[in-house]
Length: 567
Image 1 (spheres, helix red, strand yellow):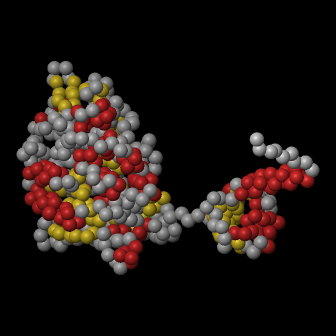
Image 2 (cartoon, rainbow, N blue to C red; image 1 turned 90 degrees about the vertical axis):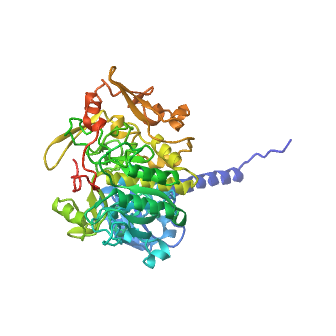
Image 3 (tube, one colour; image 1 turned 180 degrees about the horizontal axis):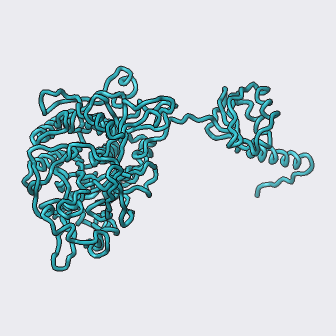
């Protein structure tokens, strides 16, 4: 048995003093922020329990410090002084906390943190090493697309390859659409990241490389052939440039089954060659010309069951997700002719701030509509309107949010297949929505009611961080299911394609992926519950069961103009 000691007299006193000293050190050290530098001189914020007295303020220079500023609303002062003098300051019982005057580089613009991409970036997910093929109207040079580090200092761009398929216009962007989309994909916010900037316009994958394949002319128009040629070139360049994602913020009316549509066949080819294809859903959600309340208006190639088809949400100019609403113009499913359940997912697409160049058609149109970004919005001391950033709305803006998310997943795990990426993004999407919302067009004053059914929001709202934290790896395809309607009972059911992961296990069941608010045991709950109101709005129209429109050319907007931002 070990011996024991009994402390008496001076020994006991020394222990009591040591304990008291330890407690005092702990109490005083809790007044200093953990990220305070250990040595040198620091600019700090000293908070007081009550407004500091004149004598307390006068004492700072006596410690070798400089009083920089008084922050009256928080009973604090900003001062610069030797770190070793902090122990004297914290001995003052009126001092409650001292912290470094930390650098703030501006809040991210709302769409990025809304989908939790800012959290992903903070953990190192920036798309590094992943190539994204952007098939659009070209890309103009912009500082936010330059390389980082030394390569950026040399003026080298992350747009590593450019080719035009429309002839005679070069690879630049006279329309302004492709550059804006590129910024959402991979802009690194270089021009909005100074200490004075109050908003930072950063893309989802700000270190990814972009392959610029121009398939739309300087008016935003193209043909199936130009897009297909661009898709073909992307597949040829896949191994050389590590192209793993393709963004198609474009579309046209559905004219035949996706199984016949050459544009759909082209995107399937890319998909089967290991490229995750993301397509805009279309901007026809307000179109009630056929009495269908915008249902059945998904555009091609977003009608293809392979690709990830993206609808547009409004971030409501906040970084929280709970107040976000669907954009009333976002096209709704099911797809015409084939009745594929689309969109697959929704992401922010309304009034998105991204890269601009004044000498483009869309910048001029946006100026005439009063939607330019004032410099003061992110650089308070600067007058006039930004020449580096502007706002656009549409599912064209929502698609690159998802393309960027796909690039982050591939940076994390390069072995993921396009089907696994699609399934994981859908599985982890937020599935809590209101029953309906009403949007009012600020120009016309017309209100549009949107129902939050499976044909409006798909599997839910993109959550980048949730997708990165998921380990789900489905087997089989992720082809979007078909909606089969029974006219006799006026009910519809999801029919997953044979061999798809939706039919493989409960973890990938339609109930799990699409959520209980839109699907119940494989049957839609929207019928007769008020989500849609009348099933004939979806199924009893020529638009859904037939086709119409001129497919000779298409524009990214459908109408030739940007979508007016909603309220």
